[in-house]
Length: 159
Image (cartoon, rainbow, N blue to C red; front, side, top):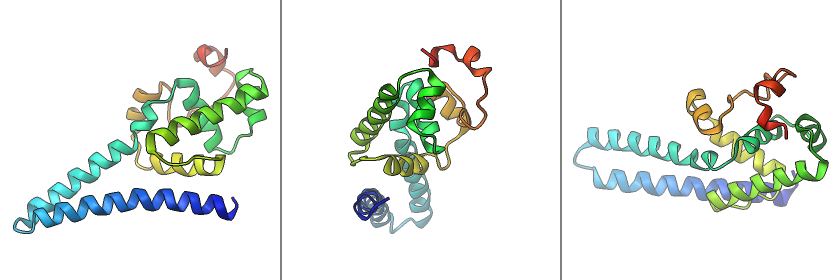
């Protein structure tokens, strides 16, 4: 990751954190009289924020989830193409489409794989496996546990 990419990733994370800080400050300012209530509200807000972090995940297709898992695990476009039985240009296109969807959903620039991996890893922190499966249609560890039998189990991924 070059310096410009690092700066972009850091700026995106800073914007996100600044929004959370503003929310927490508002909650504390509104609840100065009731510290117990403020703590409960902060917890509720953090839970809502975490759910919002995951909203973009539900906007991806099943194929995009599988591709994203492979990208998160460091697989190359060639490996993605081989796995799904598609051309290299189709594998690259999937990555571009995923970056565009995530960038639009989060209103950040996701220019390259490194930024994509960072954003995805941040969102997967604390992700409940059952909740992910309900959104994605594949297990959160699909790529980690992949073997050839998956071609029959999830034939729709291999078109």
